[in-house]
Length: 98
Image (cartoon, rainbow, N blue to C red; front, side, top):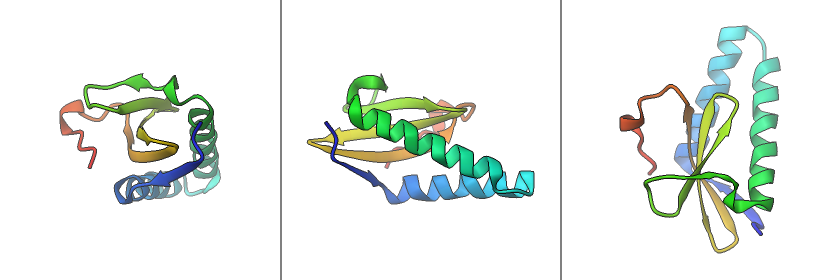
Protein backbone atom coordinates (compact mmCIF):
# COMPACT_ATOMS: atom_id res chain seq x y z
CA UNK A 1 0.00 0.00 0.00
CA UNK A 2 1.31 3.41 -0.99
CA UNK A 3 1.21 6.06 1.72
CA UNK A 4 2.79 8.99 -0.13
CA UNK A 5 2.66 10.34 -3.69
CA UNK A 6 5.59 12.48 -4.83
CA UNK A 7 5.74 14.24 -8.18
CA UNK A 8 9.23 14.60 -9.59
CA UNK A 9 10.17 18.03 -10.94
CA UNK A 10 9.90 16.63 -14.47
CA UNK A 11 6.45 15.19 -13.78
CA UNK A 12 5.22 18.44 -12.21
CA UNK A 13 6.56 20.50 -15.10
CA UNK A 14 4.87 18.26 -17.66
CA UNK A 15 1.54 18.31 -15.82
CA UNK A 16 1.61 22.10 -15.69
CA UNK A 17 2.46 22.31 -19.40
CA UNK A 18 -0.39 19.96 -20.29
CA UNK A 19 -2.93 21.88 -18.21
CA UNK A 20 -1.74 25.22 -19.63
CA UNK A 21 -2.02 23.81 -23.15
CA UNK A 22 -5.65 22.83 -22.61
CA UNK A 23 -6.48 26.13 -20.90
CA UNK A 24 -5.10 28.00 -23.90
CA UNK A 25 -6.58 25.72 -26.53
CA UNK A 26 -10.08 25.67 -25.03
CA UNK A 27 -10.00 29.23 -23.68
CA UNK A 28 -11.38 27.66 -20.51
CA UNK A 29 -10.13 25.84 -17.43
CA UNK A 30 -13.03 23.39 -17.44
CA UNK A 31 -11.34 20.52 -19.31
CA UNK A 32 -8.04 21.08 -17.48
CA UNK A 33 -9.80 20.81 -14.14
CA UNK A 34 -11.51 17.55 -15.18
CA UNK A 35 -8.24 16.13 -16.52
CA UNK A 36 -6.40 17.07 -13.34
CA UNK A 37 -9.13 15.41 -11.25
CA UNK A 38 -8.92 12.28 -13.42
CA UNK A 39 -5.15 12.13 -12.90
CA UNK A 40 -5.62 12.47 -9.13
CA UNK A 41 -8.24 9.70 -9.15
CA UNK A 42 -5.92 7.40 -11.10
CA UNK A 43 -3.05 8.12 -8.70
CA UNK A 44 -5.32 7.18 -5.80
CA UNK A 45 -6.23 3.97 -7.64
CA UNK A 46 -2.54 3.20 -8.20
CA UNK A 47 -1.95 3.88 -4.50
CA UNK A 48 -4.46 1.18 -3.61
CA UNK A 49 -3.40 -1.22 -6.36
CA UNK A 50 0.28 -0.51 -7.14
CA UNK A 51 0.56 -3.32 -9.69
CA UNK A 52 -2.31 -2.00 -11.81
CA UNK A 53 0.03 -0.31 -14.28
CA UNK A 54 1.62 -1.97 -17.27
CA UNK A 55 5.26 -2.98 -16.90
CA UNK A 56 7.80 -1.18 -19.07
CA UNK A 57 11.27 -1.95 -20.37
CA UNK A 58 12.62 0.24 -17.57
CA UNK A 59 13.21 -1.72 -14.34
CA UNK A 60 10.69 -0.91 -11.56
CA UNK A 61 8.81 1.60 -13.75
CA UNK A 62 5.16 1.09 -14.65
CA UNK A 63 2.84 3.07 -16.90
CA UNK A 64 -0.87 3.81 -16.50
CA UNK A 65 -3.06 5.23 -19.24
CA UNK A 66 -4.98 8.31 -18.09
CA UNK A 67 -7.27 9.66 -20.79
CA UNK A 68 -4.86 10.10 -23.73
CA UNK A 69 -1.79 10.43 -21.52
CA UNK A 70 0.74 7.96 -20.20
CA UNK A 71 1.65 8.35 -16.56
CA UNK A 72 4.99 6.72 -15.72
CA UNK A 73 5.57 5.90 -12.08
CA UNK A 74 7.81 3.99 -9.75
CA UNK A 75 7.08 2.70 -6.28
CA UNK A 76 9.88 2.50 -3.76
CA UNK A 77 8.85 1.05 -0.42
CA UNK A 78 5.55 2.85 0.29
CA UNK A 79 6.19 5.94 -1.87
CA UNK A 80 4.76 6.42 -5.37
CA UNK A 81 6.96 8.65 -7.53
CA UNK A 82 5.30 10.21 -10.58
CA UNK A 83 8.18 10.26 -13.05
CA UNK A 84 6.69 11.67 -16.23
CA UNK A 85 3.38 12.37 -17.93
CA UNK A 86 3.18 12.50 -21.72
CA UNK A 87 0.69 12.24 -24.54
CA UNK A 88 0.16 8.72 -25.81
CA UNK A 89 0.96 9.75 -29.40
CA UNK A 90 4.43 11.03 -28.47
CA UNK A 91 7.33 9.16 -30.05
CA UNK A 92 8.31 6.36 -27.61
CA UNK A 93 11.95 6.78 -28.62
CA UNK A 94 11.92 10.30 -27.13
CA UNK A 95 10.95 9.03 -23.66
CA UNK A 96 13.22 10.31 -20.91
CA UNK A 97 12.15 9.28 -17.44
CA UNK A 98 14.65 11.30 -15.43
